[in-house]
Length: 274
Image (tube, rainbow, N blue to C red; front, side, top):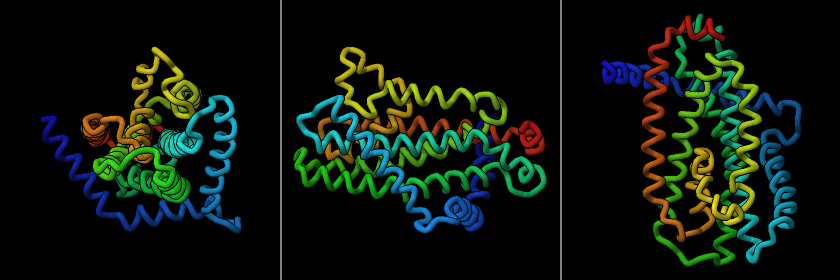
């Protein structure tokens, strides 16, 4: 029975995926509407991230002096860009069902349609605001000659971004359900993520934590971040291939579980909760 339900959920999700022209158009329209009255438009996402990274780099390079300042600035810049993208998807997804409750109840669009729209919207934000920064930091590391060429790095970069996209999907899917059934959680998540940001080695090296450095792997957001960030730092030191594949498998299983739960939810019941 669970296998049949999962197959049915895949069929429903695939049906929504085929309607990509609709949800990609609405996702792009949402992004453009945010900056409708500005001159620079969506480039403000990039400039806001650059400003944040510059300020954070100035502060943290003073607090934690490094023998390799270029590497540390790249470490901070890549970490902040990825973290900001992940947390933005969490905050936005918590209110997804509430925002689309009328459409879920009164139109033929199923829940997966709005999940795809949200994922596409968040990936557009990532592509505009973060991807140029990641590319610049990557080539900065190459120019700095941080380490020798490792032929596994391109593969790790591809696997890291695939893991990130899958994580984005399961985050938008899972948080939409959490926000629908437990609306008060949206008041708690900001504090949890802020504490997690300050205590995880996003803006500082894990060596600062000393004997507690291993505790950073408890944070799933940091695990995803590190899988994407390590190869972008042109680092072949960490053998992260097994961890990357494991994370991809875990996120895939999580997506399957959440998709099955959504399929079991009556659309009118789900809409009425919000």
